[in-house]
Length: 279
Ligand SMILES: O=C(O)CCC(=O)C(=O)O
Ligand SMILES: [Fe+2]
Image (cartoon, rainbow, N blue to C red; front, side, top):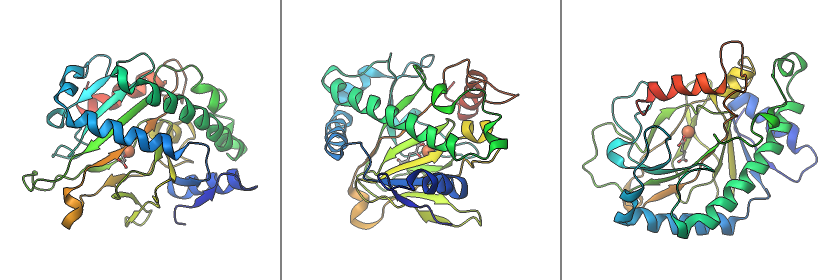
């Protein structure tokens, strides 16, 4: 099955969406409640932020993990040698955000988190009974009042030609969290790996909302929902001169939430951040 594009308002939306998550790790929604004008103004304003030196005044805090991550210290995906070609800013409800950017990004954080809770209800509703019985609490409850959900504003700068051999915008990786909600970026490049190993473009027309399973939901569902590998490939030709902005919201449960017999959110996250070399 290919990643399904599902009309959020259709009668069988939940079922088709969850089927796509089960088969591909990804699902795409149209006609969803996140306003495109809000997303566009965030892309515009944060692009300007990344163009200014003031960003360095928000250098990330290694303990708390909020703030600005420069290209020199950005992530190296698990199992890869080259750093990704990107810079980003981590936003938490308790974290730092430049004052002039606060209103829209806080609004987006709230709206996307509310939608996420509904999508987690869909996931739960369409989980087989023997899978759902292992959820330690309702999935949407796991993220209620959580301080851990992370909104990442990403800027992939134009390519200069001096990039490290083999480096790409985002090397193949899986997300750590429960679910990721990602509005289509302003430029293409996002790909997902199919079961047979082939890489295919994720349907990402402007206005689409892309949702994918992360490792924590894979863990909590005993592997029923797959946390699939995805990546962002480098643009070529004229497109190489363009910046790409994207806005994933990584849904994380509260620290004490039990994911499985092996892990709580807290123990799982620590293990993964160490692997990434950012903790
Ligand atoms: O920029 C994108 O489209 C995807 C980013 C991503 O997969 C991530 O930051 O985990
Ligand atoms: Fe990702």
